[in-house]
Amino acid sequence: MCGIVGYIGKQKAAPILLAGLAKLEYRGYDSAGIAIMENGNIEVQKDKGRVSNLCEIKEIENLQGSIGIAHTRWATHGEPSKTNAHPHTDSKEDFAVVHNGIIENYVELRKELEGNDYNFKSETDTEVIPNLIHYFYSKDSKNDELKLVRAVKQATDKLIGSFAIEVLSKENPDIMVVVRKDSPLVIGKGYNENYIASDIPAILSYTKDFYLLENLEFAMLSRDSIRFFDKDLKEFNKKSDTITWNAMAADKNGYEDYMLKEIYEQPTAIRETIGTRVNEGTCKFDELNFTKEYLLGLNQIYIVACGTAMHVGLAVKSTIERLSKIHTEVDIASEFRYRKPLVDEKTLCIFITQSGETADTIAALKLCKEKGAKTLAVTNVIGSSITREADFSIYTHAGPEIAVASTKAYTSQITLLVLLAMYFAQILGTMEKQELENIIKEMLVLPNKLEEVLKISEQIKEIAKQMYKEKDVFYLGRGIDYATAQEASLKVKEISYIHSESYAAGELKHGTIALIEKGINVIGIMTDPNLVKKTVSNIEEIITRGAITTVVINEKIAQMLDTSIFTNVVKVPETEEFLSPIITVVPLQLLAYYISKEKGLDVDKPRNLAKSVTVE
Ligand code: M6R
Image 1 (cartoon, helix red, strand yellow):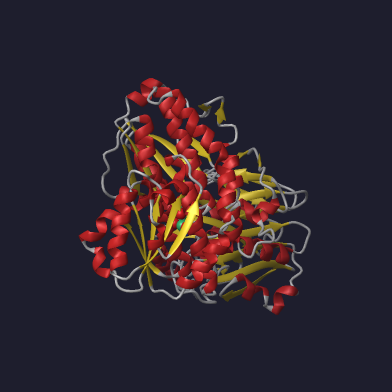
Image 2 (cartoon, protein in one colour):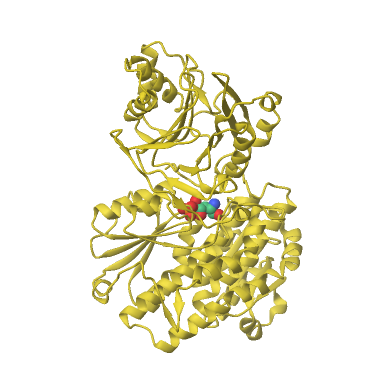
C-alpha cells in the first residue's frame, strides 16, 4: 500500500522522483523519502508526513544525480516516523532499498542478520531486505555484471510475503535492480532513460511504453537498457505494452480535487465503458467464450470484492438474477476466503476491483481457481495483478481513478455488469428482445442524464452546509436503493469522518429506530414505484420522531408523493430500474464531497486510508 518510483537516465533524478511521488501519494501518505546516486555515494533524504514535507528539505535541491529511487509510505510495521520512512539502507550503507508490501518473516530474518553483525535502525520489516542483499553480495566471489541481481534474487528467496522492491548499490552506480511479488510494479521505457513506478499514472507524462513486471521477474536497468530475468535468473525478452491513457487524465485538470474531477468524469467514463459493447440491440463480450451449455450448467455466480467494489455486487445482484435467472451471491473478499465457500467447477466467480491489486480479492480469486471455478476479473487497470491470475478479464474504461474515495469506478462497474447480465440473458434466451433493447436504449442516454444530475451540485452544497457538523447520519433504501444507501454511507464515512449507517428501510423498526431522535439526519433513496409507499411510511415513522429528512427521488416518484413532508428533496432523472443506482449515487457522492470540504478535510487523502489495499 505504499508508492514507489525510480528513475535512471541523464536528467536530474530528484525532481522527477518527487513529481512521481506526488502522483502516487494516494497509495500512502504518512512519510516519504528519496535516495539518489551522488558521485558514487547513496544520498538518502526522508521525513515524516506528506511528500510536500520532503520537497521542503533543502539538501534535495542540491542533489545532481541522475539515478534514484523514492517512496511514499502507508505504515504497516513501525509507526510513521522519519526513521521508519523509506529508503532503508543496510547497516554498512552500501545498498538502498524502497519496498511496497509486507515481509511476514522479518522477525526471524532480523534475528539471523543480527547474529551476523548487522544492526537495525528502524522498526520496519523492510530493513531486512538491504541487509540480506549486503549479506549475499559480500559472500559472492564472482565479480561479474550480474552480481547485484544475483544478490537481490538470493535475498528475495528468503522473503515470505509480498514485495515490490527497487535497489541501488554503491558498487554498481550505473544500474538499478527491481523485482516484484504480489505487489505492483511497472517499468516505463524512455529514450536513454527508464522509469519505475507502482502504477502507470505516476510516470504517464514521460512515456506511454510500459513493461508490466510479473511475479518474481527481475529487471536490471541502466540508462539505455532493461534486461529481464525469470525467477531462476534466466534472461528473457519481454514485450512492452503501449498505454492509451493520456497524461491529462492523471492530473486534476483545473478541479480543486481529484474526487470532484472524477465525479464529473462519470458521463464520459460510462460512455467509454459502454464503448462498442452494444451493437444493434445486442451486447458483445468477444473476449468471453461462454456458451449456452456452460451458462446452463452453472450452479451459481459468486461476486467477490471489497469496499465500494463489493457495493457494485450488491447493486447488480438482482439484475443478474432477474435477467439471466442464475442464482447470484455477493461476498466481501476478506470474509469469503476464510469461510470455506461452496464453490466448484460449476460456479462462475466474478471479482470486481478498480485497481486490480486488492490483496483480499486476489487471494479469493486464487481460492476459487483451486476449487475449479472459472474466474472473471472486472477491473479498470489493464495489466493489473488480478488480470494475470483470472481466466477472463473485462475492463471498465473510467481512466485513472486517483482519489481514495471511489466514484467513477463504481458507476462504470455497474454499467459493465448490467451489460454482462444482458449478455448472459442473450445467450440463455431469458430476456425478451424488446426488453433488452429498452435497457440498451436507456443505457445510451444515461451519460446525458448524469450530466443533468451534475447540475444540481449547488443544491447539494446547501444540504452539506446543513449537515457538516452532524455526528451521525443514516441512509435508507429498499431493494436496489439499499445498495446505493450502503455505498453513500461509505462515502460520507471515509471522507468526512461522520459516523454513518445504512439500513434496509424495513429493518429500521427491528432495532435501529431506537437511535432516531430529534434533529438526526436521515437520507432516503426511493426510485422503485412498487416499493416507494412502504419506504415513505418508514420515513414518516422517523419524521414523527423528529428526524431531518433528505430524499433522493426521480420524477415519477415525485408525482406519487406529497414531498412537502421532507426537509430536502433531491430530484434526479428517471431511468431503467437496473440502471438507477448509477444515477442516484451521484448526488450522494457530491454530498459526501461537499461535507468534507465544509469540514476543511483533505478529500482526496482521507486519514488512515490508501487507494490500493495490497495488504490483507
Ligand atoms: O481497487 P479495489 O476496487 O479493489 O478497491 C476496493 C476498496 O478498497 C475500495 O473500493 C475502497 O472501499 C474505496 N476507498 C471506497 O471509496
